[in-house]
Image 1 (cartoon, helix red, strand yellow):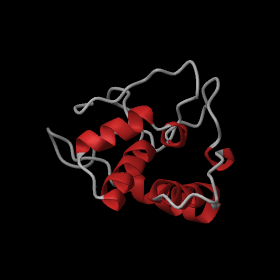
Image 2: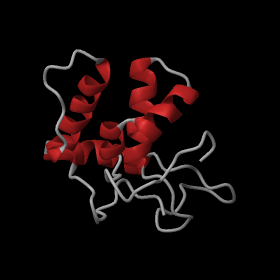
Image 3: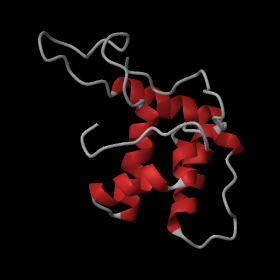
Length: 127
């Protein structure tokens, strides 16, 4: 399935709008996450971004046109891919550092839909 975002929250998952980011932090990660949080919480902006993400479906390998969003194996949502891409480009980091951040950084994990506890999902370099 190629979902933009999972609408059904999992046990322990925090709503993206309710994630608490340290307003006094001078690090760049909370500032980037605050921008992503703004995109998600402002309905008009979110709908436009999600519309663009829906248009970015990959092309079919066989045949013409875009891949069917209702078929395919479950995997990362397009929101998760957007968060990973924004972090990688804004921080100017390689994939090894991105992997470490998404597996270990609590706030980033909340932003991509993982709970603080009970969720030990890991991301490998080839997911």
